[in-house]
Every structure is written in C-alpha cells, then in structure tokens.
Amino acid sequence: MSDPKSGIMISKQGPYKVEGAVRLLDSDGVRVDTAEGKPFFLCRCGHSNNKPFCDGTHNRIEWDPALKGI
Ligand code: FES
Image 1 (cartoon, helix red, strand yellow):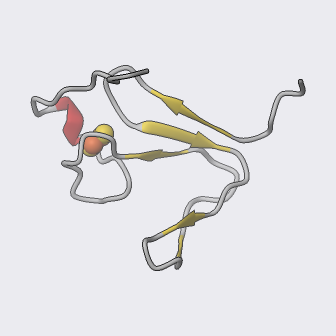
Image 2 (spheres, protein in one colour):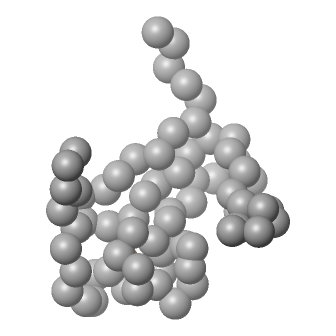
C-alpha cells in the first residue's frame, strides 16, 4: 500500500492536524480558505474562537480529549 500524500492526525490532547492537498468545506459546501501547501489544525475541543480552526484554547480549558471507541 502506498503512502497517501494527505492525511489527518489526531493529537492526544489537541486538534486534528490536516496535511496535504485537501479542500475544507463548510456545512453549506463553501470552501474555507487554508494556507496552500501548509498543514492546518481543526478544533477538536469545541471551544475555539476561530472555528473550525484551533486557536489554542484547548490548552487553557478543561475538556476530555479521550477518543472513545478508537
Ligand atoms: S482543539 Fe484547539 S481550540 Fe479546540
């Protein structure tokens, strides 16, 4: 199996790191701008003030980063 050029990494206590050529779309299917060629981080805690992106808030709040069922 070849190694894909894009992927999503789930951090232990933080956001999803998205790498590679992917399109990020909002719930209406409208493209959300990301820095081309650079990874971006999607909020997993639900408390970012810059959703869907992580703004580091997860470091200052209490939340459960456990991945239940994985
Ligand atoms: S995961 Fe970083 S602000 Fe939510």
